[in-house]
Image 1 (cartoon, rainbow, N blue to C red):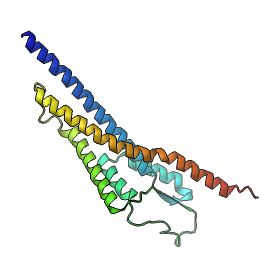
Image 2 (image 1 turned 30 degrees about the vertical axis):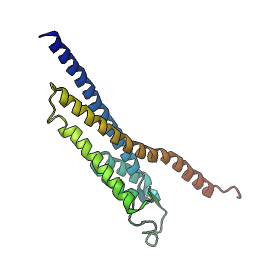
Image 3 (image 1 turned 180 degrees about the horizontal axis):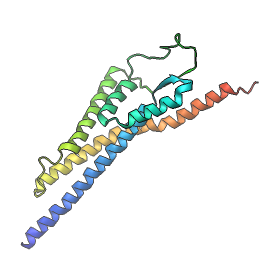
Image 4 (image 1 turned 90 degrees about the vertical axis):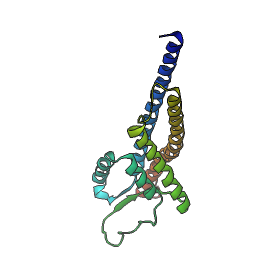
Length: 192
């Protein structure tokens, strides 16, 4: 093997190493994003007060098995509800009922845009996990360059969605604390 061929091999090997690092980075970021979608979906609760703990555990178990594709589809439907179910059972129950949900006001255009962005994310994830190396030639500089470019594009899209979802998830503790504060004020009024 000549010095030139040795340099080419070393260059290709270095490039492959970078590509594999980027594949790992994208997979990890998609897993982190999936975890955040699971947090968002866990915020939807509708149960009698006496069964809240049981409902939370049941929901947690159900959400743990959901795929990114299902979670993203549910997220759009949940975050952009067609109509509000609040008070749906108010006349039928004689006990305290707890309902929590998250929602975004933005209309059908925003909902459709979000659905398209999340579909692209799921398609990217499926391509990354199931089909990425199908046409990849690890001995070709051009193939390495094309794959590296695709992984960088994927990272940008993952990061955009991640920022949006992370922003919503980060608001949950603040709103939960506010709900607790209001419940405490109702249950323990200062005037009594």
